[in-house]
Each structure stands twice: as structure tokens, then as C-alpha cells.
Image (cartoon, rainbow, N blue to C red; front, side, top):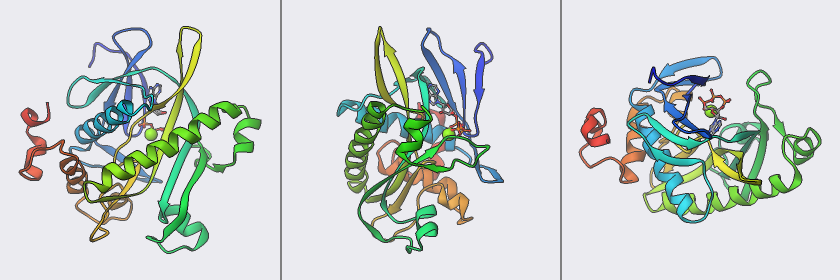
Length: 252
Ligand SMILES: Nc1ncnc2c1ncn2[C@@H]1O[C@H](COP(=O)(O)OP(=O)(O)OP(=O)(O)O)[C@@H](O)[C@H]1O
Ligand SMILES: [Mg+2]
């Protein structure tokens, strides 16, 4: 770790210079936050590293380009360095969170169709919601980039909804980030950052139990257990319960 130069310290991950030019190492931390509230979810970094590896690999196999190269160890993965587009794309299938609040739609209401929202990635401004007009007018992304981000987000939603459904989880909504990647002179938009219970809402199909970061946001307890349960359902953790997560042997 100390060999590498840290180039970014985020709230949930740190970024280090990668072994080759054009690569980065993403280090997944246990730290978490929601607005002013900060906390630690023991083992989260290890689980999110695994979960994001798994989901990005599956998405890559079905043709969604991603920044993921390979997992290096329990908390680190090698990714392609991209120029992050400062727009968070949120896809919603079921009303929850800020959508429920903003429009007074009870949490859990099935939406008539998947809804896509954009937020400007700026902590200082509190990530305001923006329209396609803002994105193109302010030059954060061009119309073609936006088109790619939209169609990739819908494909990600279709694929992940089915994948999670198969494990008894409802993909309520999720947030993704995209980046620009240059291969020689060609620019491609690729999925970057991470996909994990930090940025997906996942509810048990039968009980509607929340198995994601909302457990931390809403002080529901059993936060660690929720992340472990998602990993277990994806088949990333062996059967055997929460104790397994701390055993490095099983996580390698
Ligand atoms: N392949 C990549 N190349 C460059 N930057 C990346 C890549 N993947 C993710 N990032 C960026 O690395 C950071 C990851 O750290 P983390 O998720 O902890 O950030 P954060 O504290 O949530 O802040 P932010 O609001 O920027 O997401 C994010 O800013 C993300 O946009
Ligand atoms: Mg982030």
C-alpha cells in the first residue's frame, strides 16, 4: 500500500496510482457516510470489492464496457483510469428515497416504467438534480455521450434486475458513474466507480427487508449483516453465516 501514491481520498474508497500507466487501484474502505452522519461498517470494503468485481464482470460479459480489470486482494481492485463524467445516473424501478419524498409517492410503489435521473456530482452543492439540458449546456457530457450513458444504464438495469431477482432481491434503484476511456484515438464511455449495496437499493422479494445502505441511513441496525447477505445470495460468500466474512482465507 505505502509503495503506491494515493491520488484521491474519497468517502468510501481511496484511489492509488496503478502499476501501469492508465491504471488505478481502487481501495475499498469500511467508512460510510450519509449527509453529516459518518460511520464504519465492518467488512464493507471487503464485500463491496467482491460484489462490484462480480457485477462488473457479469456486465462485461454481456457487453457493457467497464473500467474493471481484476481484483488484486481483499480490498483492492485494478481499474482502467477514466475521465469521470461528473454526472451520477440514477435508475429507479420502485419509489424510494428522494423520489418518494419529492413527489409524495409511498416507498415501495412500483413505478409505471423505469425512471432515469441525473445529478451533478458535486458534494459542495449537495449533488443537485439536473436535466439533459444542463449536462450538455454546461459541457459535462455531449449529446452522444449522454445517449450512450442512457442506453448503458437501461441495459445495466435490465440485466441487474434479472440477476438480483434470481437471488430473491428486488433492485429498487441504483446509481452509476461513467467515464471516458481513450483507446488510441477512440473514445468510449465505460461504466466506472462501483456497483454495491452502497449505491443500490436491494429489498428482499418476500419481506421487503432492506439489504443496503438505507440500513445505515435510517439506523435500522444489522448493517454489516445486510451487505453479507447480498454477497451470500450472489454466491460470493460461502454458506455459513456472517462469521465467514472475517476469515481472509474465504475472501481471497
Ligand atoms: N476508473 C476510474 N478512474 C478515475 N476515477 C474513478 C474511477 N472509478 C471511480 N473513480 C472516482 O473515484 C472516486 C471513488 O471514491 P469514493 O466513491 O469514495 O468517492 P466519494 O467520496 O463518494 O466522492 P465522489 O462524490 O467523488 O463519488 C469517485 O470520485 C469516483 O468518481
Ligand atoms: Mg462515491
